[in-house]
Length: 148
View 1: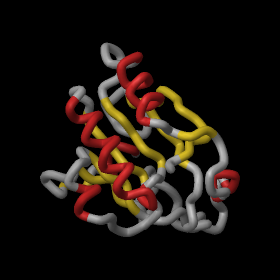
View 2: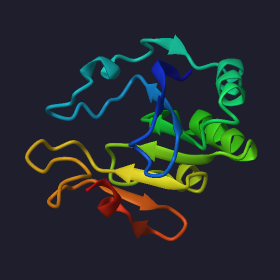
View 3: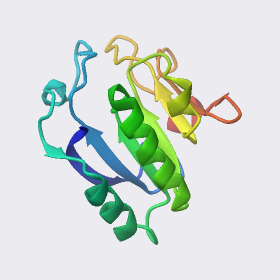
């Protein structure tokens, strides 16, 4: 079962979108310099039940335009189900992951995908030398320039 530490409305993570951001716990990547090591603990935070998830999406349906997951790819089947529901409700979808690629079952449900582990010396999406990539999934177009 997927757990989350936070649900927020965010404006910068997906350019041009008002996103409902679900920060998922249980990350096993443990990137050096991670700004959120509390997210490594499995099953910390609250359980993201189907009822809770749908309630949040309904609450923000006329305000937010995108559903963003910070992690959660380690719960592939559950994440795919959540992304499908978001799309059915008219939302765009995005995943931020420290992996370099994700399973096609997940990517097929995404509008955007941010890949790449956090590496302090390379910086984030706003840095020219970053290893991280933000792309539109359908076209495979890299959109890092939107963060500069």
